Length: 362
Image (tube, rainbow, N blue to C red):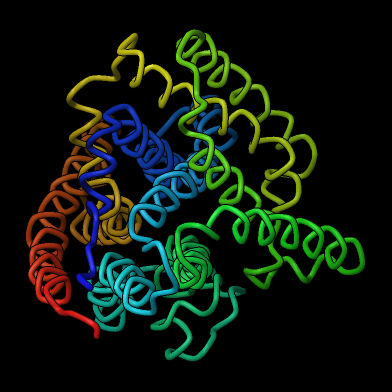
């Protein structure tokens, strides 16, 4: 029997061009949040406040997106029978998608801090092995990596489901979503501190939402794609303000307020792609290509730029020029990381997959 790996993630997301573009938009939203928060005085108070209310929610869109994209990839990676090889290969591809760039950044942080500021003093300092393995969502070295702990948990769950084969995929996924929602609801109603543990964090529900969309992709109608997409963005902005009034970025609040509009945005992106009724444009697709690297490197880049500009007395330059320079450098670094790290690792993994695909099991 030949083990066949059907399409990798990048091929899948390039089929949905609007989904790929949406990845870039979500990353860019978070990007601007951290850009302006690096030094509050670089923007006017109303711009800073608006960005602080809306832009962190790019993560919520990305979680739903990831649930959809990775589940679709998992379905295509599943065999028609119980298969440990497909399961392990899927998990290995996901690990190699995350860890190379992340570990390089983590390594660099030990050389640049101090003097470069990486996190507030009150943030817990977990052992380095927990940071390296992404077994904690609290990361005092690479703060944006808190989302990667969620990603890795989700990848692990899907890898286990893949093991049981394609025929049982939907049933097991539904069961996991059901159990996850029950456990999250129960334990967080008893003690809110349970939300600090990734499997019981309410934002896992956002991944679940994207997963269910992947299961029903054949039923998606594109008749109202544009309406759902733009309505989703409108409601998303409103819910950002509701979320802020409820208590800022509490995991429960953002899950209850931002999951539905994020799902509408993702659904609309899929529907408009299938119906060819709207396109975000090539520039956003390009940003989608480098979105992971751009997301991973940008905050460290901004803090390093702040240190260098303050050290060499460059903060007197026009604020718009400073922000433009910082943003351009961060995007350039994301582009270089994508080409020099992500692409190279992806090519290596393709070769490994071909070798494993040629293996036969008696």
